[in-house]
Image (cartoon, rainbow, N blue to C red; front, side):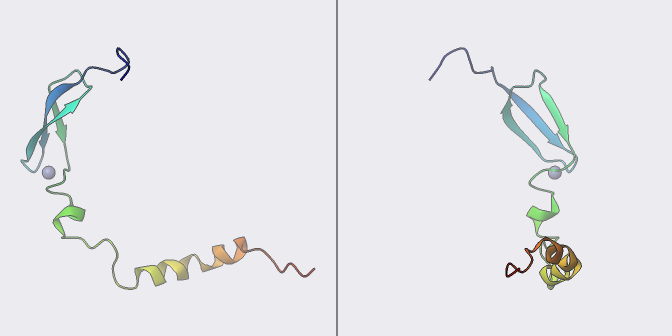
Length: 78
Ligand SMILES: [Zn+2]
């Protein structure tokens, strides 16, 4: 490992608005960091929100069908 190319890291306290606190290492000079979402309260992790709902893919394809057709290569038999 090369020496003197790595920044110094400090343990900082991360505080989320949901009340969850945890420590992590960071190159930031400050000792505390405030965040609005963390892995404990974000809906993608809590399971309150489904990332892909039923029919979402079909809806997407229907919406962008015209675009994908325009991108598709035209008949090469010319
Ligand atoms: Zn949180």
